[in-house]
Image 1: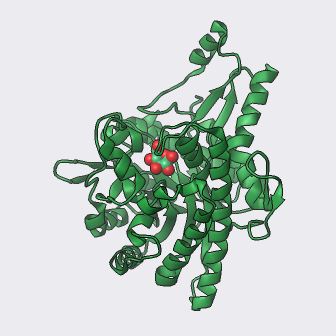
Image 2: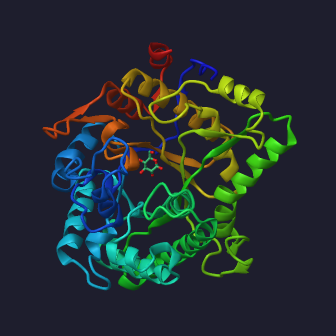
Image 3: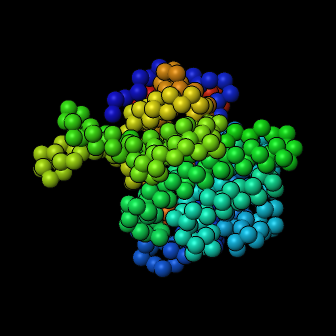
Amino acid sequence: MSKPNYREIKFPKGFLWGAATSAHQVEGNNTNNQWWAWEQEGGHISDGSVSGRACDHYHLYEQDFNLVKELGHNVHRFSIEWSRIEPKEGKWSEKEIEHYRKVVEALRERNIIPMVTLHHFTNPLWLEEKGAWLNPKTVDYFERYTRKVVETMGDLIPFYNTINEPVWVAYANYALGVHPPCHTDMNEFYIAGKHFLMAHGKSYNAIHETVKDMGFKVKPQVGIVKQMMYYDPVDPQVKEDVDEADRLDELTNRWFLDGIHSGIIRRPFGEGEELDYLRGSWDFIGVNYYTRTQVTTRLSDPKVLELMVSRVGETTDMYEVYPEGLYKQLMSVKKYGKPVYVTENGIATKDDNQRCRYILTHLKIVHQAIRDGVNLKGYIYWSLMDNFEWSFGYSMRFGLVEINYETLERKPRPSAYLYRDIIKSNKITTQQFQKYF
Ligand code: BGC
């Protein structure tokens, strides 16, 4: 990785700065979704943990938002847990709706903009029993849940993310078999992917319609959050590698984004059908970016393997550090002409200096993308605090804030203060760069 050049960089006025969490990863005791059930089976989570009480954010959210305030964030991204709001099919929990209203209010009272994700990996158990995203009816169930959220708290919410990383969820759950229900069927991936795309479109329209029908004053911005994996050909001179990278980019990135843009569901996910409600169903694009995947079709050749290994740069507890991929992916969404937010970007590491460097190099990329014409409006670090990292459990430390899982004590790391200082001045100074490189 090339070193960032050390000159001061400034961010646009009004830039949004924050961090993200998701309900199942931080709240604790989300007992009514498919992840909780899967965890109880044992043997699935690599460090042997279960989500359990997690960070107990469900009870400690006010304390956590005080910290968010102290750390200077002006936006906070979090998810509402569908299985709490609709514990049984068509039955709504007034108590949980009230809870999330209070959560949103708590952010607003602190002048922090709430960015609400409606679906972040978890499905209510009743939905899972009906086949979840393989079932076409889930598109309507998701729309109904969306309407309920907006009717009951839409007066308070300026930003919605409909679905977090839909293509990755469809792939991980139904083709790769690494997340529940652990199926390994490409056909199911296509079906689930299509249903996610349709559900996004319906949810987008439902939000805008409901806000209008209810006469709310707020004008919400609604977007998709797309994991934008960058596929890097192992040898850019070799056509097979380049073609393979292009194939994977189409399979996991382009068909979905183009689908929202054009309303057309491309093969093999659809039949090329065109849906009016889907076309243009976004006000912004959320980009989640962590790393690259090196791509080749020539894995049986030991020389190619050697080349791959030699290309790996700095690593973390989970991924390779590859900030250039963020630039490429931000540039790739520029053509849609929508505002863009980095909705997740972060690092699992026990070395907080490495986290500081990671933040600096990726913000440098964010700055470059803005300079090169991407309408980039904000950066949201993953994650506010250490949390339950899905099938890796609690072994991964993504947080700006360290969690002691015994005592539930929260302790901001030095990176949280570096980030606070950047936010406060809306720039990165030469000295800040120099301290870490
Ligand atoms: C997900 C997060 C997850 C993060 C780090 C993203 O794919 O949205 O829930 O914790 O990656 O792996």
